[in-house]
Amino acid sequence: MTRAADVVIIGGGIQGASIAYHLAQRGLTHVVILEKNTLASGCSGRTGGMIRQHYSTSLVTEIARQGRDFFATFDRVVGGHSGWVQCGLVYMVAGKDREALRHNVALGQRHGVPTRLIDEAEARELVPGLNPEGAVAFAFEENAGYGDGYGSTMALAQRAKEKGVAILQNTPALGLELRGRRVVGVVTPNETISTGTVVNAAGPWADRIGRWVGLDLPLKLALIEEAVIRVRPPDTYPIDTPAVYDFVNGLAFRPEGTGHTVVAEGSSYFKGALDADAYPTQPSDRYIEDVSVRLARAMPRLASGSPRGGWAGLLEGTPDFHPVMGKAPGVEGLILCYGFSGHGFKEAPVTGRLIAELILDGTPSLDIGPLSFERFAKGQLLRSMYRDDPIMA
Image (tube, rainbow, N blue to C red; front, top):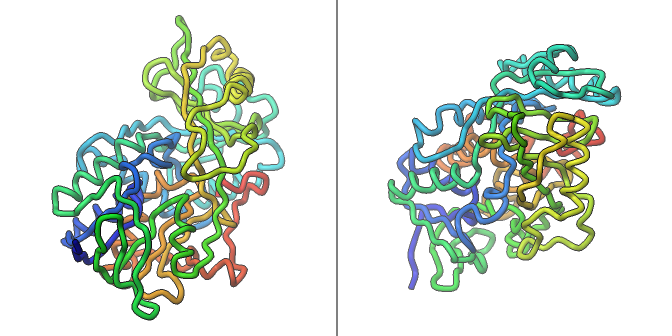
C-alpha cells in the first residue's frame, strides 16, 4: 500500500500538531502526521505548562509573546481544552542573576510584554507567604500563565483532522526514501508515503531521523521531574496566584487546580543513561523529598503540604538550549523543527505557524535564521543571560 501527501510530519507532539493545524488553516490538508505511539505521549504530555515571555534573545521573546497571545484565545479560536489560566509570574534572583533579570525585563518591554522590575514588598504582596530570603532583585510578568500540554496538543490535532489531515498513531517512521539528496518518501511499517516535504518534529527522537540522511543532529536528553503538592486546609492556594521562578532555591512552582501546587526542577538524582524509548515517567522519592524542602523554604506556608504524585519527562536539549528550525542542509525537502529544550509547549502555536509559512510561502513572517542548524558549525550559538541556568534561554 502506498499513499501520497504534500507534507509528512514525523512526530505527534504539540509541534507536529501545531504545524498540521496551521497548514490546514491555510488550506493545505493533504498532510499526514506520523506518531510512533499516541498523540502527546512524549514531552508534550509531560510539561509543567508554564507560559512565559522572559527570554534573553529578541527572536525567542517575540515567539513567546505571540505564543502567549495565542493561548489567551486558544479555547475560543481553536476549541478544545488548552487549560489556559492567566496568573502572572514573579521572578526572584540572587546577586549573580541581577543583570540577567534586568536585561530580560527590558527586552520584554521592547516587545510589548507587560513586565517590570518590582521590589521585595510587592513580590510578597503578589504571592502571599513568599520568603524572599537570599533574593536581591524581583520582576513581575503580568500576563503570564499556564496551560495543559496534552489538551492543547489534542485540540490542535483535532482541528487539523477535521479539515482533512491524516493522523496515523502507533505508526513509526522507519526511514526516508531519497532520490539523490531529495526526499521522495517516508517508510512506515505498513506503507511508503510518497511526499516531497518531510518535517522532523520528533522531539527526543529527532537525531535518529537525522542519521537516516547522514546528518548529526546533536541532542542531549535530560530528565525533568514535576511534583504535585497538596496544600492542607485551612490554607489556600488559588489558581490565579502568580507562579514563581525562584532562582535562589532553584525551582519553579505554580498553582494547580484548587489547593495544589506543581513544583518543577531538573533532576539531579537520575544517574543512568537516558533513552527516549525508556525513561522514568514518575518523580523519584528523593526528588519529591528534596523539592518539598526547597518549596518549604520558598513558601513556608506550604511546608505542611503533602505530596500527591507527579510526573517526569524528557528535555531534549541542543548545544545552546534553543530550538533548530529551518531547512536541513544538503537534503532537499527535509525541514527541521526540534530541540526546544523544555520551551516547546509555550512556543508551539507560533513555531508551528512559522514552519507552515516556510513550507507554503518560502519565507516565514519572522526571521528564523538565528535558529538554523548551521549555527552550530558557524559558532553562532544563542545564549541565555542566566549563565548558570542556560535552559532559561
